[in-house]
Length: 70
Image (cartoon, rainbow, N blue to C red; front, side, top):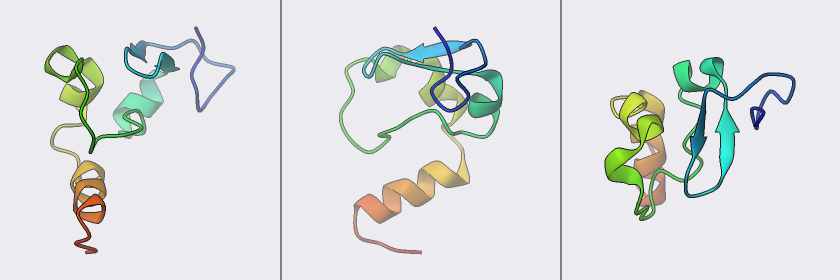
């Protein structure tokens, strides 16, 4: 499986919900979770979610989804 954002690269992890792969750079830049604000049954064991848990980008996306533009 190749990376969704960088098709020339091999995926390091894949999203179990969306069946999409992501490379190391996407994980490091928190560009991997495509929908961090809706329910995901895989979230408790999701490596992508765990890596992006404390990301500013994630907090911004969550705030925007609730209508709290910052």
